[in-house]
Image (cartoon, helix red, strand yellow):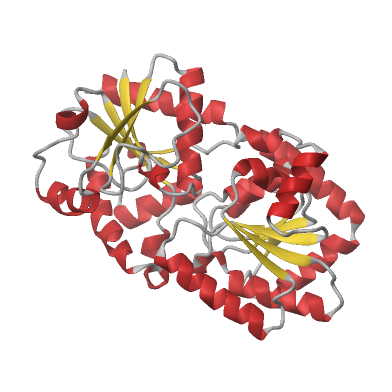
Length: 385
């Protein structure tokens, strides 16, 4: 069976979708060697040379210098001419992991939907997101199977697009095995120095999208500093959103300055997983007050590193963390966030319980399991042809 996987997440610095795609491809090769995988990408920025090629041997890259936006959002919305088979030859399945798919002559389409935050929060998006909203119904209609990262996202898809239950399958992403590795002292020292960090600090991991609720986190941190907290706040990550990311960074930086926290808040920018492990393991805790997640990998990564987590009782997050984290009833309440941080710092027994439960919880999400489930979906849609 030959499968083309969307390679566009590797044209930019890897964000959540890039990590998802890379780990899926790597583990499919291990657990389903009968599946021949190629990456497919169109881009005038260099579709023939993906910027972030997965660290997977013998994966063929089908990259083409073609106008991706025109093809995906204009040409292929109006016609099925010039299908992907015209470029890549015959294949059985196209796996759309990044909300877009080319026209197909006879191959089956499997689509992973990580979340539909752009539908739920259109006011928080960049201008270009309108094309995603417009293209989603047709993408889902064309799909033989839709994979959702969580039960929460599956329910959202059924409610918003009236998809039949049998067309949506929940496949939980796995934990990147890199987070199970314990870095040595030299690696940790190098990582801390590279990002101007020194314990003790609280950590946030993710991009700077407004739904991540970083303004409230900064407000809560300001209250903690006023009460004598000496920790710094590390805002780790921030890539993948283009102009929106830059705009949000300016807003956050301004608020940090207004609150007099310039020396206490560190924006690291993008951090590769190999370095992120060190930064996580040195953190006092992860504070992740997002108001909407289709899955939410950072809490899982922190748990795997033995770091206690504070996160929101919203969207998919309770589904992911279970009883292994402190859950915020109202993540928009800065005082509640501050109170949870103080409670976790003061209560060693609670901290130990969350660390232990977190390690067990993280171990339940593996890419081997996810890859087997995805491979079974490929076989299922091909057999139904």
